[in-house]
Length: 475
Image 1 (tube, rainbow, N blue to C red):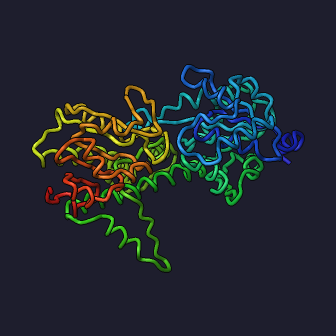
Image 2 (image 1 turned 90 degrees about the vertical axis):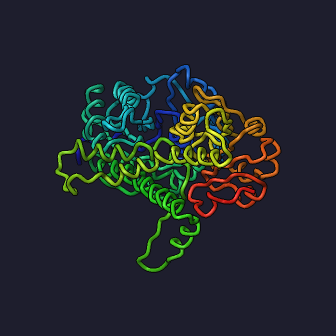
Image 3 (image 1 turned 30 degrees about the vertical axis):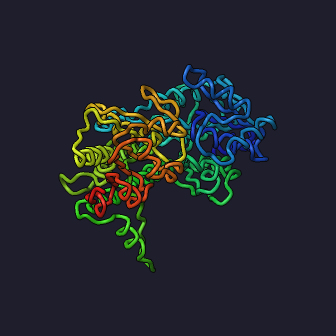
């Protein structure tokens, strides 16, 4: 029996857990731990800062600080708070009370070109954990990180701050989150959980932590670095798939055909040995994960010790996919300009009504939203821009309204950038009446409107991948 195994046996089963970072990942994880009968108490750690302190009071009153549709989340928060099993605190010294702590802190890239992530918040979190770390505790990084970080930077900081040795005095693992806004609880319960410890004892302890919250999902154990690569690769692959359908949509526009017809055709080929993971085109990719995880994967290769054998001078297909997806807001702008030209208008001085600021439907998550670069392009060209979103009501430097009629009144162009459910119900007659234009423009980046309905009412229509409609006769 190793030293760590002895220490863990002496400590006994995990009973008290901490979750550092009360966001889209940390909150649902914390309350699911708290709801598990085998755990006694969960502490959610949140800095008492100007921008985030409101979360502490809301959570301790059983309320969710996350907006948008999150089935079951607020009810579960209320349940575990009432039962005395969950508490949010800004007091990091209470880490010393715990058997296990997870870190769910964002890891963005300030500048992807130099492959240098902004780990400042994560490093601060790791240092806080290290200061109060005790023997036989388990530390788990849930944040998406560059492969090699758990066994490298994280291990080093924890050992420096605590004076303890990872893998001997305390357990250390990476168990990446795999959630999507709008289905947080369901994803944690039902998705398989990747768990990678720095040694076998660490992996087993992490499995003990996560198994009680899984319903359908199972634990998949591996090394810490393999777990890091799994997380970055799965998001990189999804980004690649989105780029593939986005590029196909651009091709279909050029060939004056409907990408959705082609998609249906491609997707229809079924059978043994045939896989077609074909996704949907759109106005751009946003969020915290897909916009950066490719760069974590690329950086992992760059800083690793191994030798990469790859076609000389060839671009990474993953980075190229990122460029295609980053191009889509510019393509939306180009469609807007082309639509205005069809009625003899310039973008300068035109009123553009943007529908959707969140990066994903029916959510308030606006991190890295493709709506922002689109708006920037319009403003730079001299357009007058208004923004509607039923969920995102505040965003730095941007005025957003939940009054749809107010936003599209007198607009020359109505541009759909998010696929919120409410936009599927918008009717051509009503939009034409509110805009007051003889030939208003509709640019659809999420395939939410029926083109013929709007074209028949005198609109100028442009849609991503709708080469069959984008040059229609103006009625």
